[in-house]
Image 1 (tube, helix red, strand yellow):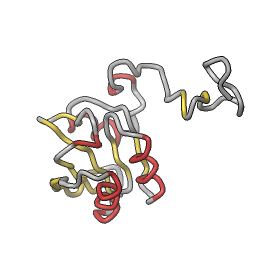
Image 2 (image 1 turned 135 degrees about the vertical axis):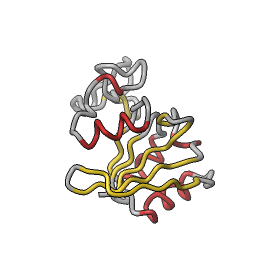
Image 3 (image 1 turned 180 degrees about the vertical axis):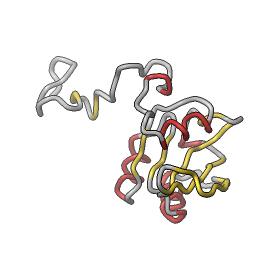
Image 4 (image 1 turned 30 degrees about the vertical axis):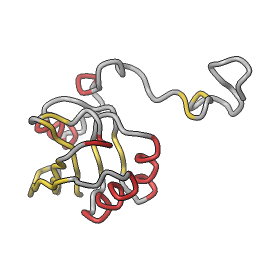
Amino acid sequence: MRVALPTWDGRVSPVFDVARRLLVVDVERDAEVGRSEVDLEEARLAARASRVAAIGVHVLICGAISWPLEAMLTSAGTRVIPRMCGPVDDVLRAFIAGQLASEAFLMPGCRGRRRRFRGGRRHGGPPGTSRWRGMA
């Protein structure tokens, strides 16, 4: 499996949409078997998603990411694990060990929360429900 993490100063980059470096790690049988770094020069979201797909990334672990870019990556077959932060090696070890769900790696302000709203509708709620009155 190929896992990628955008990096900045040894940590998971806070915003994937503008990250400049991507750590690409090959994982087999719960162990890292190789790693490389890739420069991300693509500014357009579609080009960035195409680049990640061309690298063959199966899982992207990142900080904040825009909905359009996340949707493009997902439709290209890349699983996106957003809202993660911390030292890259710690986050990677937690992912390999199956412990990335720990709140220790969630971005500040995201503790115990999931993305709740898409297009004015509460994500996960019944269709037609909304946090705001008058919205369908």
